[in-house]
Image 1 (spheres, rainbow, N blue to C red):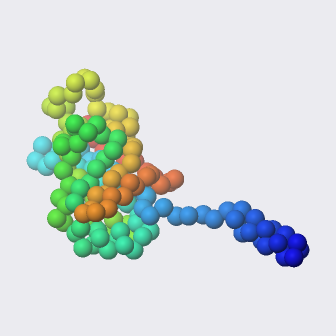
Image 2 (image 1 turned 180 degrees about the vertical axis):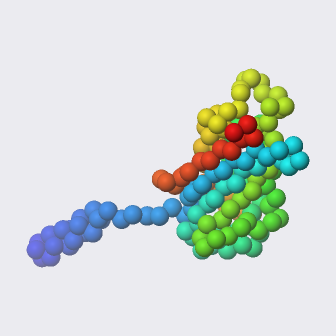
Image 3 (image 1 turned 90 degrees about the vertical axis):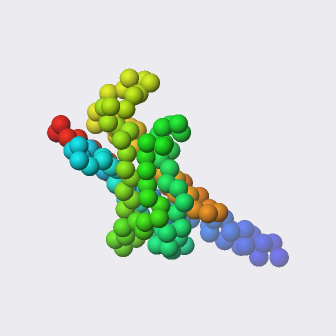
Length: 155
């Protein structure tokens, strides 16, 4: 009996200690800010890799109710506009979201008198993203190979 119990405990310990890599439900793959000319509003394109079929189905069925960039102060999030009634562009399991914004424009009054250069814009966009559905919300963290591209008119 002791041998069976010892064998059971040994197998339990070995099976629990295996390094199991769990993929996140979704991760941020790429963020691109494009500062367009005066005729068009600047925008942020965010590519999110979705590893969960339920989330992919919800995005495909236009169930997304809100898109939140958590690194932007709550009172400033109204400068970012995502058209939730549109289906995001999908390429395999990566979804692309276009968010219109005037937040980084020089004519927006900033209480902190921040000059929006590439580094400041990168820092402002480097946080987590929230995908908010009717009854669910998903906090999407950056992937380990995430890329951030900032394209300014002055460049």
